[in-house]
Length: 231
Ligand SMILES: C[S@@+](CC[C@H](N)C(=O)[O-])C[C@H]1O[C@@H](n2cnc3c(N)ncnc32)[C@H](O)[C@@H]1O
Image (cartoon, rainbow, N blue to C red; front, side, top):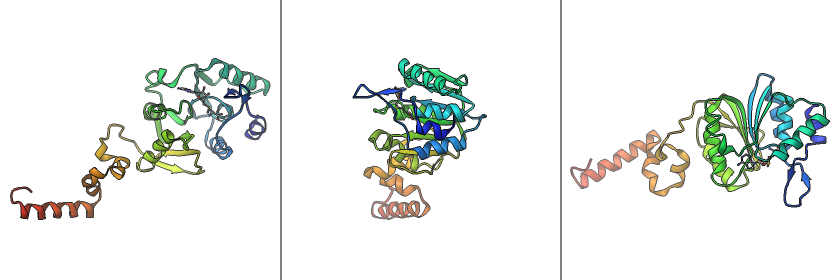
């Protein structure tokens, strides 16, 4: 089994509104990216199950898949058996992601796909708990960034210098590389995403860059000249 054959005949594991079995997944360029960067040494984590699981199965050496519906997992296993590829190296956790946030704490990952629950606050919580174990230079894919939850997460990460948006680019799906440690305990006034979007925080925004900081100090000094004792 290779990527091309998965894309020609993908697993149909989901039952959406119509009651029919359907295959949904990432844009194919993202599967190509996964196939290119994952190796038999990779340790990967996926929230949700589907076509992506087949791509992890053929490309990653050690994969964990968190998905709450046992029928989806069984359909995936049937697909693997019918297409003669192994899932021995896949750990299936038949749970919702919130049930494993603490169980998976302490594990480290080369690659994470977040494509499970998309309602508030699930993608944020999945990102918060799971990416703490993402190795430096590891990748995270966030799917469904056309939804405001996932888009907010994407916009937040774009403004953080620990996370680099890497190609392929799409409105629906994004990949970030964790290029340096990220401080998950930063306060709001250290987060560019919040500063840029909160008018009452202009003072902090100015403090971020040297010219802004100097201007702010001069303004403060000028005010003190008018009201002595306030510097
Ligand atoms: C859009 S599908 C995933 C598609 C898959 N990535 C692919 O490429 O085909 C969403 C998946 O997330 C699962 N899911 C929904 N809520 C979840 C949650 N809270 N935690 C984990 N998985 C969840 C669904 O059962 C479904 O398997």
